[in-house]
Length: 90
Length: 151
Image (cartoon, rainbow over all chains, first blue to last red; front, side):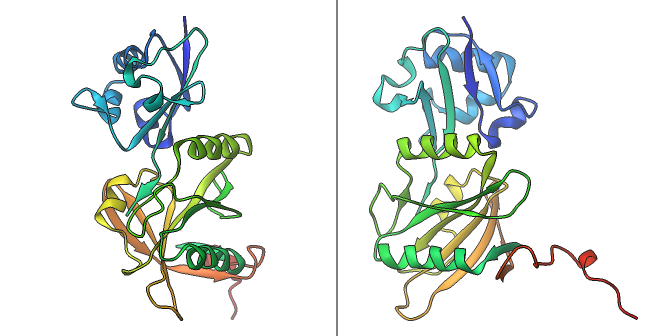
């Protein structure tokens, strides 16, 4: 089961410049673990103490995981996972 | 340096005035690799606050999908400061995550004048850059090499 993950510009240093990569996992947390095993350092850019960093949005099939179970959000076969940095400031 | 058309500057300033005293925010998209801001996309500040701005997460996803389908990138990411100078705040710096974007700040603290400034924000380091406002990109000089030498 392969999930397609869209990588934002700022994290492409971890994926050799690739905009999309494949990963495995039944939840967003598992997908991040799998990404980390192939693209070392990426998990640290997404998580703080095991929770999703507040500067990062992750979507599974267009749904923001903050409203869908967070890191436990289920990822189906052939799902698309999109990572986008929040655009925000003061 | 940010080279930007005058009509796009006017759009940004008008948006900032319209939403004052809340912060206004948006993007000017342009072709990937061009560094040329072309398509003005005002965004809703989902925080509706005079001291914070944030693109709604659903709007953000639609924006990036739309830009991807057009081979565009966010050349300019703009927002307003409504009571302070047009300089990135600590919060702006901590959130900044488009190292290739020009971060434009407009201050609307004065009713009859505005500040319009542009910055690069890379790895937490802010660098101000010059802003060259042009009528059209067709005639804008992109470098000294464009200007023929005269004897």
